[in-house]
Length: 443
Image (tube, rainbow, N blue to C red; front, side):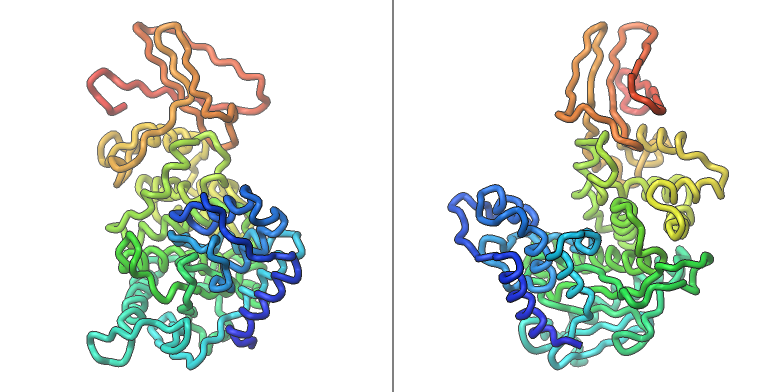
């Protein structure tokens, strides 16, 4: 196994030689309160970096974050690099092949091991990846490691014992034994964590009812310190772990799933299902409410509302079964397949889901058009409004309606009337009319 520090140094050299990256001084107007992705986009726009170097810098941000130049060092960490890693693996660009370095399990100097029933935590007390040594109970285990371990077992109990998700793919045993491995590294506050799969371990997962060919073992990498940010570190550790562990389970069912939203929506659902009291997912919702007519993969995290809604109004078993169907189906087809086993149809359910987005009320009011945290949701964007006989269009700057998406139109009619909609588009459009009565915000 390649030593982590040697690997990072080698990566830095490869990146500079392969794509000609020469760190440039930041522009005077370079924003500071941005994530790495935002800073990278701005650097390309300002001519600091060539567009063809983007994927190489993305790889570096994951496996060698300490080598980033000052103008790419973010003030705000991104919650996860897992989606980016999957994109890099699928990329055909030559420099994207460097992302395979992330698939090599980290090797820590003077590695320490802390085992729970189902997880093995790898950490060190020396060097730049050292975990803080605070140890209030004096048992020679850092408090951060112990809290992470408690979080891990709580997540395991909820997803496996309570919700009956299949156990992850065996790792044969990489990491020292067959527990799920968690590596604590200094991610330089670029990301809070990510999940990577073991490419050579993909086969059938005996814990699932189907026979898969691309069910892979996976490991998690989490930041060795989540303090000093706007959100309490205890909350960040909990939701980050629940999010990344769902990715471990997803890899253990189908590592080839193509729909980004199916990966990330279910991972965010896991955060809220395991730690319902935290609700950090609310910060992820604006893209869906601002652009509800966009393709699902344009707001994969906000689409967590779909499994949340299915969980709250149908069953958590349905949410689980969607991913079990992902072993043979992709994207919305996996949802359709899981619904069919319950004699349910997708179209009426999506219509109800769309109405629930407009209502955004806290349950149990007007069920099923409600949510546990609905009173904290944003207001959905209205595409157009008809008042009497006058039409006012917002247009949202896109003039589109993607599959499984929705446009919301507001009709303010003084009296009962007839409305006829025509579309030159080929296909099927579903129209759901919801009446709101004066003085009452409920349909």
